[in-house]
Length: 534
Image (cartoon, rainbow, N blue to C red):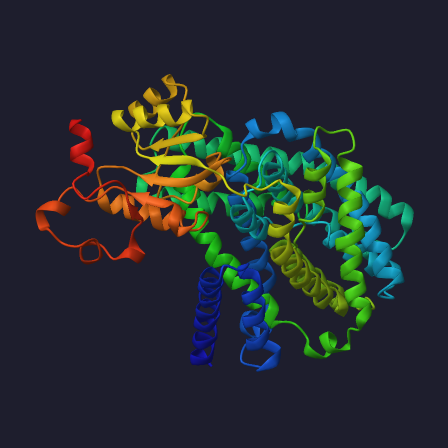
């Protein structure tokens, strides 16, 4: 028995990471490969049985994992971005959510033939979008203007709100009486905002207090943060059911926007942890699918999917943004970007189990229908959104600006000349003094490492089409090239020749393999030392 458990747990991790690697290799959303791997390992072959493997631990495990994902999402949100897009984001997570809920609930009732309570619950589950899917798509599309920030904020903030909505509908189904349910819903909303808000802000303040006074050693900071996130989630959930997701999201936002201590290293740790969590969750949840229920679904399921994509999403966007500063092209692109992800999958799985235990009819349809929507929306948007963005002119079809990794004096002189020619220029360095000098020249400059994935969220790359790694460290230059290979073409990634290249008198390919570096800048005799002496 113990060997079977060990094999199953190991297989879940191996399958998840393998799916992530394959998705990276093929440049396609990882969620599709995760679902396929889990589906094959579960209902198709019968190799994995998550319910037997985890038993009563399954639901708490899923809930904690979703909480960690939303905390990591909150860490990426900057309140400065809301100055221009705050109105649109608020409308999308209020008016837009209500529109999506109404249309999807009606479609579930009339198209899928579900009873009214289950239809309303399915509609509530499907109001959330998938930030873990949207993020990689936006990096690939690289939209200009406000749409990227709008989608990022919507995807992260609507998840706890949508989860709360689904919980309220679920509780109303169990209560049954309309008047009693209405009172309960109003009370639950107030308690969620009160307890979730206070607990999220309080735990963030405690963590900042401890970090600011260096009461937590460096090697414990990430795990202490992890434990405090779980603690905030647990305490909030005990005081008000399902308010924990709101608490941890708010905790992440507060941590990201305070000025007392840096949280970059925590964000990097959470990014790596989220990859593992998402991989494991999707394998586990897709392995739980019922093959018989899936095969019993008819063409009405596809019609329901198309209603969500072609009617519900465009209606929610245009009704939410009619008085905003977004132009028609930006609204059209927003209308074509609403993939569902891990939160929808997790919430549907949790409620399906609870409803099954109390004997609610048609509850077995929740999970397979949600997964059909996840697969369908990710496939549709993943394949068509890049082409639509180019067609609408909201993506950067041929950007000619330059990102410099390194901000030495001679780099700033080159960057200044390029900017004066009318091209966008961005400079990044881990030396605060060099970054300050760049800002004094009125250059867009950021403090940070070109090796971190955080740069994709922090740095505005509008109009940037090329990356030049020009630090004094050849290994750092090569690693920066590999990092930015995700959003730039190989032909647009450049780095300086190593300083000892000429002394060793080796060919470029022998000194550093071409697939592990960028294109070399300038002639063979020109390296960092040469330029620094000019």
